[in-house]
Image (cartoon, rainbow, N blue to C red; front, side, top):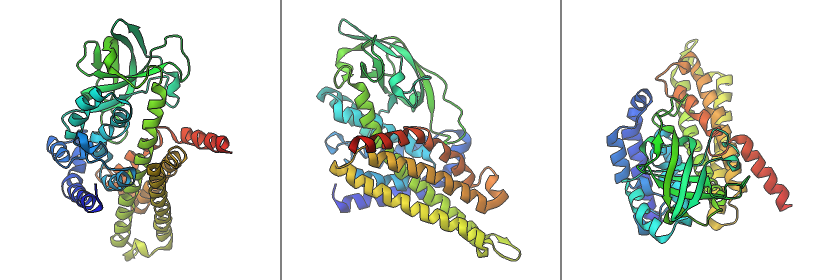
Length: 379
């Protein structure tokens, strides 16, 4: 996509987010659901396939364009982005990079059009930060596999049409070895999705447990090589981490904007609270950290796109930007004072929504391990 076309996409998304999604944020938060009209319009804008190849109906955005779009999406509730995030990210990219021609032709056009939703089923009760501890089994049988296991916190599971499931195809394997990736339709016999979780924040972004009880999976639904699924998962997560970092930049921009406006208009002692230096300090610290996060995301995206760095940059950006968003959101609540603790106030929602980013797609602690180990390896 050339620069002019991308500029038009970015402008259209920006207008849609601000004029149609932002006014319904309170409704989404209260009802814990994205309205059908918003989903349909998002599909019409191509958002379900913005990072999928153009040959399959996607917009084909590169990483540098991806992060710019993510910053715009971050201006509103993250539940909106979550609706189509796995199609473009960890699930869709695995099919793009490792799927067979038949798998790509069958699923990618449907994902790009918003006609289908893909979920990334990796996490388990005892395999979260360290997915190499997963216990789900896909025992080889004639013509395919027999899948058994339980996945947890699976984004979009109640909406999914297909799951990218990671399970051990070598029953005696341990650690990262012997794990394979399988495409499992949500309506396959033996697949059950639990009720969606009630979370602290990010209402409208549904997660749930998924149960696989002796599910028959045909051999043609194997993604990539048998036993190489752990590498597929890690490669998909690297791009996703950089996208999440950019999303956090957008959310921090919104939080700071709300804080600045409140400081400009709210009055104490007969004058705007923005006249007080300690309030100014809160705003200044947030601005400086936000600027650093924005610069880091753009630099990491360029290095990712060129192939120069697809490990240190994404993990560093996710670590810094998710933690940065937490601090910016906290200061925004502080600027609002008691009003910032009330439901229905934007910064209160952002404060709750922000907390999850330091946990999913690799906790902050995991990012530190990834970064340190890579530094030591490179030395």
